[in-house]
Length: 475
Ligand code: AMP
Ligand code: ZN
Image (cartoon, rainbow, N blue to C red):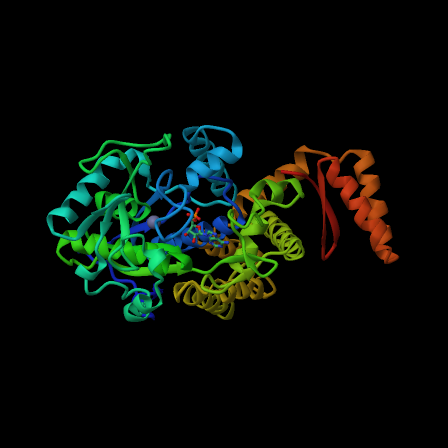
């Protein structure tokens, strides 16, 4: 397996850091102040594919993910409100309540799109003691200074600061405006512990050796990753927005605390899901959630298939039309697979067909094991479906590919076969479907779309395929 390492700006073979076969992988989790959106799902689906590919290639993976439920401020400059307090005000609830609610919503979305749960998930608020201990180590080693509003990390004491993002520290210094600094010694210095304001009562605050307050956002990821994976581990993932500040700061504080032991071997960063040319984000309020996908009658797996069509390091623009195309493609795949599965027995395989199977397998895994080139891998999959290898072998190969794609093909096939047997299509729905089909034949697409909607409003889904169309109960 090879992966692009942001630290070295090159695609590298993944070799476990420690003796043995295990990969320690830490994924920056969500800040639970609002609904997890389709942008988040893109990031966690692609993490899931990465983990599946690593496991498929014979490695074991310990997957740790944090839940940020305190300390992530609205501004990266250690100013402004805590996003959690802002979210609590927006929804008129307590910070603790929204943290719980939005964390559940996040897991619900991940479950829907087939993302396996991490081996360990850890909340920042459950690890205050670990964060305080790490800050104490930094203090003892002389990396901190205190200001009115908190305890800060002095980045000038860590000369390697900014290597991950290739930051030009001199330029940053020259560009910093004095009023932005607020007593910080250097523009890149960052808060390790923030004090509660004297004028305002915070809902989340803890005692510390420096005063009542709360941890800075970056320290949680260093404290929890090192607690569960050790001072040095293999893979750390996050969105590309984390490169210049969050991950840069994680490296500085972790390595400063451990005496410059290289913190992480492979840094993996995902590009954004966009909508109308802008990053889909909670703060821009331009987001859709998994509930929108389901309410519009799409299956969460169509979303997963859509995401697999783009490389994780490229931007992807979200539209409902591309999701609809992906739904049609996914349904077609499940339908073909159902047909293959029903064909009993295996025909004798000629040497030529065996070679073809091996060729598809090899091309598929070469693409996906090379920096997760899912678009190429999925193209091989489609090519395989059109080949002349026996149906039973197509089915087996598809299921093998799906071990890393995670579309849940085998489950969908049994469901669709079960559906065909157990849930007969009611007469009125069947009639609507026939009328829709006739409208399509006469190219009356407006009527056809209206009829499709009517069918969907009644809890059924109609999908076209090579042989005509099928009607299934909505899942
Ligand atoms: P947050 O909840 O903002 O802390 O983000 C959690 C993770 O989701 C981070 O790794 C972000 O980079 C990632 N993320 C947020 N928005 C998007 C998006 N539109 N597309 C892809 N990843 C995103
Ligand atoms: Zn993080």
